[in-house]
Length: 513
Image (cartoon, helix red, strand yellow):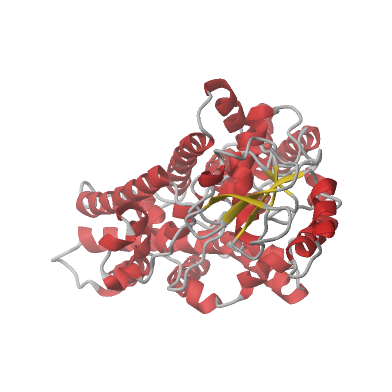
C-alpha cells in the first residue's frame, strides 16, 4: 500500500434543515449537563483524591522547583507533579489565591477541554449536527445503575467529584489528540505536526498515566483503522520519539519508573466487581458497535473498543487489577457508537417522517433515548451537590452521596509544614491545608519508607501503646499535632486544642507549639 491513507467513511450530507429540531434538543440537553457540572464546580464537593491534588498545588506554590512529597515531609518525587499541576501551582504562587480557588479554575478549564475535545473528535466521525451533543450525553450518562466514581471515568457523578483532578484535563486533551491524529492520517502533514502530536501525547501521560494509556489505545486504533502506509507510520514513529523525549526530560518524576510497580493493585481490585450493575447501559453502545463492525471490520471505534476490552480482560485474568483503569478505552468507543447510531437514525427518521414507517430508525433512537433516561435517573443525586440534599425528592436523595467536610477547622493552629499524626480519612485531607502526615493517605510508589511510616501510625494509635512509645514516634517524625476521633482522649502528654464537626479532636503533642 502507498503512503496515502484510506479515506475514512463519513455520513452522507445533511438534507437541508431536516435535523435542526432534533439537534437543537440534543444541544439543549447537553448544555444543561454542562451547566450542572459548572455549578457543582462552584461547590467543589470533597471526596476521593481532592486532598491529594490540593496538597500538590500547595507544595508547588511554596517550592516550585523541588516540592518533595505532597503528603509527607520527605524529599522524594511524585507522579502528581504534572505539567498541569505545575501550571496551577505557578498560578497560586503568582496570584496568592487560595488553593481551592485555583482548583476551581482548573476544573472549569478541564471541563472546557473535555467538551470541546468531544465535539472536535465526533466531528471527524460524523457530520450530523446532533452527533456531538449526543456524544457528550452518552459519555456522561450511558453507564449503569450502580455508582462508579474513578478519575478518568466520565460518568456524570464521577465528573462532579473529579472535575478538579488532572484526569479530566487529560481526558479532554485525549479527545483533542484523537481529533488531530484522525485528520493527520487522512492528509498527512509535515514532520513538525507529528512532533506536536507526540508532545501532546506526552503531556497527557504526564498529567494522568491511566488516561495516557487510554489515549495511546485510541491512537493505535486510529492508525490501524486508517490502513496507514509506511509514510504515515514513519511519521507516527517520529512523533512517538518526540513524546518519549519529553517524558524522559520531565524533571519532577521518572514516568518510566512507574512501569512494573505493583503497589496499586489492591486499590484497583474493586474495578472488576459488579460489572453488570455499573456498566449495563453501555450494552446499547456495544450493539451499535456490532452495526459498525458489519460495515467495516476495521472501524476505528470497533478497533478502539477491542483494544480496551482486551487490556481490561487481561488485567482481570492476570491479577493486574490496575489495568482495569484502561476500561474507558472500551467504554468511550461504545458510548460514542451509540451516539453516532442515534444521530444517524434520528436524521433518517426525522427527515422522512410522514412519508415512510419509522422502522429500525425509531427503534435505535428509542433504545438510546431510554438508556440515557435511565442513566440520568441513576445519577440524579448529582443535583444534590448544587441544591443540597434536603431539596431533593426522597427517591433522588437516596442516590446522593454525602461529601467529606474537610479539615479547615484545624488551620487556626496547624501551620504550613507542620506534621500531623492522622490516619484513614484525615490523612487524605489534612495535607490539603499545608500540613504533612506521618504516613501517606494514598499509595506512594516513590516513598521508600512508606511501610515503616504506616507501621508507626498503626503502633501510635493502637490501644494500650505506652506513652514512651508514642513520644518516640513523635520525635522520629517531628510530629506536632494529632487528629483522632477520641480513642486517644486522656492519653498521657496530649493536650486537646480543638474539636471538629464530626467529633474529631486536635491534640498538641508535648513540646509542640
